[in-house]
Length: 365
Image 1 (cartoon, rainbow, N blue to C red):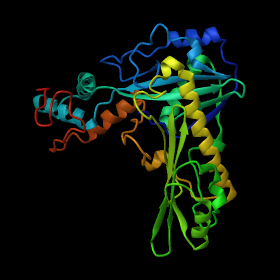
Image 2 (image 1 turned 135 degrees about the vertical axis):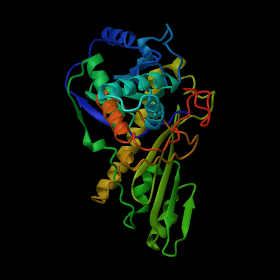
Image 3 (image 1 turned 120 degrees about the horizontal axis):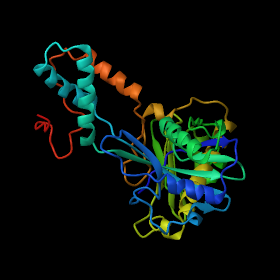
């Protein structure tokens, strides 16, 4: 099952390389398994969860849908919990009391490098689509750090030049949930989904189908929209979304029907078809929702990333891990923070147990 967050849209100012140049760029930048010492790796992959590297028969035609170029970028990152570094550093201090500043720094860096291979990388697959006619880039993610990594990578690989975010499709997505809604406003969502209304006495009425007449009567009786959910079927699965009473879009998901579905075999049938259907469906839903929001004016904006809440409509509740780069400066800041707290007698628990071990049995002694 593959979960997709709300899409972020950008415009680029320069021409793409020719078709053969794109193919060569992808061939030259396939992601490799992350090394034991590398903290981060970025590259092209065939599809989420696909084995690496790409198969030899993976043709460029599988990346092209009409005038759209579809591909997937994988971000892999190794991260060591600060508590693990601190624990190991305190062990070193017991054997090396009153060290010099330079010795402390070298010890922290050495500990970090020793622990890094013990923590497996956290891969994130980000699907992208470039509309070569409109000069638009769509990234199927609303996480700022993921978008920044992908944007920087595409600038380097494709030379797309300056990219400007199109605010109309912002993932800061306002939706007015008031009695002002009419039954006709939900016409775009009549093909499936649930609408939950809250009455004056805290009653809730949920319908598996949107009955326009019943909905109008409930709204006329004073019910307010409490939440909406929609499943929009495509040839490759279903795109679902859910909004809560605060007006925030919690998540967008591409839900696979089963292992034998078209999506499961999308690589054989044409990878671009999968990505295209995915992003176009997400885009269509957001346009409909944006139109409703504009109709009723301004509303409180809910930032999906800042809220940290992700509610999947149906299917597997597990979602993609958010990727974030760890630069040398960030590592230095982390080590400085450890240094400032190194006088504490408290030995913290590990945030993540090392592979093949438990919390009580630390394998580093």
